[in-house]
Image (cartoon, rainbow over all chains, first blue to last red; front, side, top):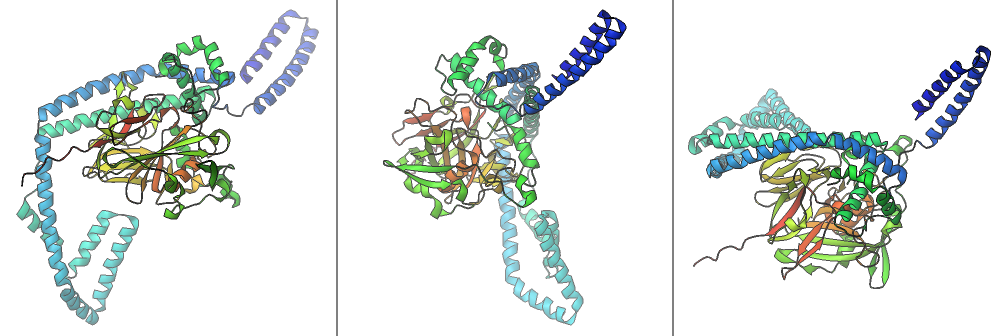
Length: 296
Length: 313
């Protein structure tokens, strides 16, 4: 708007320069320029006074103009999201085919993995129980040697601090390392417990190729879906900006127009809007029709 | 719908506007009353809004006349009165025991447009509700469908994540993305209304990045102290039910109060306005429906668990 006013001022000046004698031209130009500058100032004031964001509800004629500007911009980006949808659908079909091809292999793998995990967990629980029973005796042994050797006390305290620091930071790998060091001082070997468990239970079964393929395809569907959502999010933000409205107000105004369009399509009375909005939207029905595909 | 940009602003807010001068910007003045017979009893006031809800504050829960639904569900309705557009608000509450149902998420798209409505809930659904917040045709935030990630997660101070494990255990985690191990279904929403019984400070004062004044038809999901789901929906209640889809209703702080007063310990807002839709099936198998104006991309559905086959002694 401001740019338009300034451009008009320059145009006036150019027309005046062509039409009038030199002095009159100059005097006239100065007067016009001064007048224009005053007009611009008034214009600026009006603009700053009205620069507050447009409201989202209820929708006014001014808001509707802004909303239609935003929706036109959304329409321009619709092809991209549509293409992404086509790609998602195609990939989803591949997922369905991969699921069919995998048959019961994923279920069998999950069951075998759960069996091994349960066995490992039981074995480690058994070791832990054993350690708990032995702990009082082992602690007494360590503490009696600690009394004789302050370096041992320092070592125990340092290991305890490392555990609490890791816990405070929420650093699970560091906590596990510190814990393993701590209990090793009392004669317990976690690595040995794990080795015993794996020897008894075996390792987790490798994933069958069909599952690896299925997971890859599912990840591709997820990536495309994220991409589509990002495109919609970006388009919404650009549309709100083009409308000159805060994103939340734009979304509210958009919802109200959506509700009107939905009611009209179903030939129902619009209950979500004011009478003024209904009248406004009905009067602008031909403009709304142009962007109707964005209201689905 | 609360657009993602608003959440972006919420995420960026590290201090509230009033905090610079050590003052709080008060919530817009409002109060809520509940109808008891012919009397309206005020139970919440913005000037003295509780920061924390304990059982003793579950004032609305005590006033609800629960009706039996299928598979251990229950539902009830209350008439509320607030200020402005909320002068007549119907509150519909559905309670679901996750131990007695099978919870799933359902999506539906037609030509890339969101296409889920209550018609898709199916005959085995005992309760169904639109889940999370929506970005145009897609759900916002993390969506995990039957163990497979459909959409990536987001993290912000007021984001809550609802998860269902393979064993059926449910959880609402706040401001973090929980470990996905064992999780079969998950979605995210915002803003958090209650975190371990407390109302987030962004909902207790103005100027903290959350619009605490806007009124709309609301929908919220919570968990009570016994781990049961509480789904609460508001509908404009003037002139019978003819205007029940008008998007008038409560503010976000008022909805936090509603969830606290219903006995929720943790709660989050879901997409309300024209998206809000809810179904509950009664013990006789009849579906009671509160449809939305538009179709949505994601819904949480509670199904009747299949009856166990009789065992032969």
